Amino acid sequence: MSEKTRPLPLWLSLSVLVNILLIGLIAGFLIGRPSGPSLSGGAGPPGPLRGEISLGRGIMEVVAPAERRSFSRRFRQAMGGGRERVLDRLEARREIIAALREATYDENRIRSALARLKSADQDLQNGLQEEMLTALGELSPDQRSALAEFMSREPDGPRRPGPRPAPER
Image 1: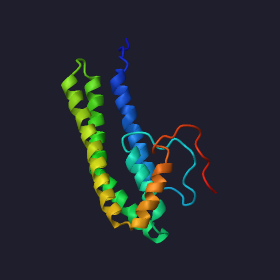
Image 2: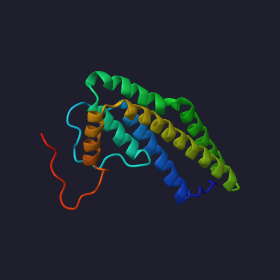
Image 3: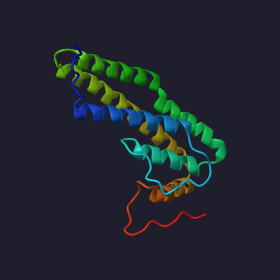
Image 4: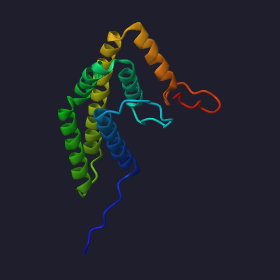
């Protein structure tokens, strides 16, 4: 006789999806973007790191091409003390899976694992923000002005009524 399996609760499914999305965003940020016009009119990355990713893209746009590699490496390192975070996340995920397979529902066990996931995400965001503060302090006034212009055109920047102007070519 086969055992009936209960579907995952909606909140747990959403949490897993958000975590997968976050990992995808981090991977995309680490891979980088090609140089050239940066505004495609897309919606931009969703999620809790949206502002940081937009700011990172802007910094990469305003620094000289020779400096981009250094900034990119620093941002990857800030995000990438990540091996421990990724391992913590995987372990927390395994804990959730193991708890779900138990005959009795253990809310505290799952709550603890979800808290570890949240903590890893928060550590990632904090590390990236600190590195960005340092990077912003190294920009010239002209670069900061260009960054402000870039940020005002980014999809997650200020909303303006009416249609969005086409990017300049």
